[in-house]
Length: 189
Image (tube, rainbow, N blue to C red; front, side, top):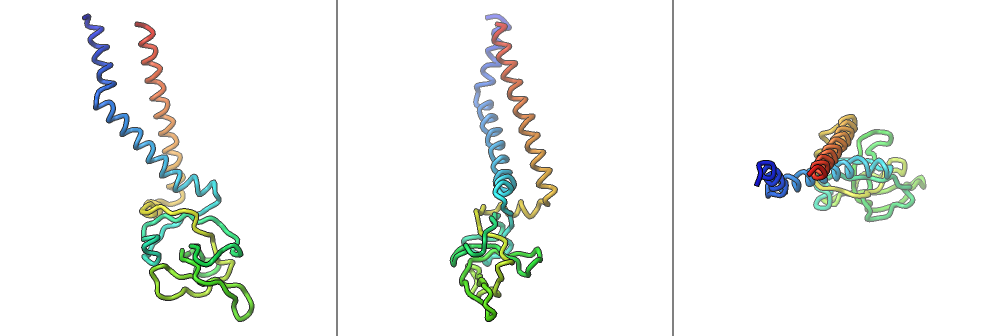
């Protein structure tokens, strides 16, 4: 066996050994996790016209514990039903919101429709809510991901998306380049 054959055989063993396979599995796993996080936190809500919020208190335990990412899709308040989870503004026009379950739908003394919400872990109802205060209905939730959402500003999330997309493109180019070099090497033998 010539030295060149030994080197090729060793390179082939390195690409099929346990360390190579573990590296491949780990890199694909990290890639999948990053893509899934970006999709769940940024892409899917944006495409669906939804907004992501973080549950900060235990008022919706056990269904939505603190740190849960809740994605809320806009809804016409007329379609909101008792038992559904929705997000509403504490005060109309203000940014502070609460995500609770609709416990009653009724009318004020003046005949205006109003909604009564209550947290699953609370003993009392919230103050009545007007339809214009309702931001949307719960679309989906992901436990613990709200901590990441709270830690990142909108600008940081945008940068994270661009960095991840750039990283994926570079990773793809490296993988294609390696496959191309390997194929070229086999063609010369």
